[in-house]
Length: 214
Image (tube, rainbow, N blue to C red; front, side, top):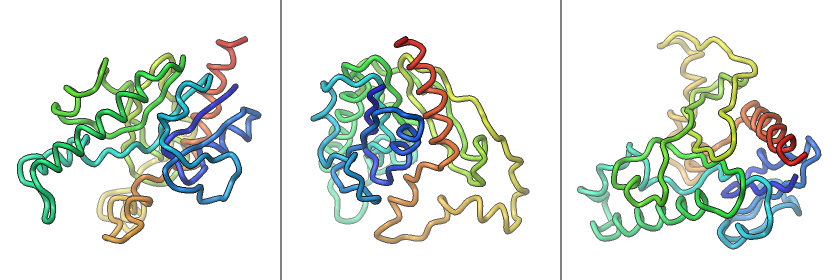
């Protein structure tokens, strides 16, 4: 099966699919962290018509789409203007729309819960099919991850852990993504795909698509 993993630099989702024998490629505006020759440096939209069986867009820019950032549309952060915020929103919505409506039979797009202004700008918008956590798949971490799915089933838990009690040191360790201090790499830390979730996606979505193609 030919699989395109869009907006990924880590290579983690790509490797999960290639480990199962799929012809998987990743792409992003930045080079791959692992230096793989199965990574294409480009805008994902340049590749959408290349005959993929499955498209998984893992970390599309979502700062202006997500509900947690809607406040910036009325009160821009320092150094930004009101017009820039709305222009960024339009750009992010256009990228999501192009991926969601791509000429690919099976599509999965990761994105946080959107505010209404973003939803209004998404062509053929549909609510996310599910919201999962890394600890459903054996990864000791908190990071709510919503998947917008077209012709793919929701992921089922593979190794559900028991979350630690609030206030404990272990709970703080599980919250490392949300507690990441400001830094040049904070965006990378917060967009990380966890290995258990990647393995589950490759096995479940890859298996489902392979059966459909048989």
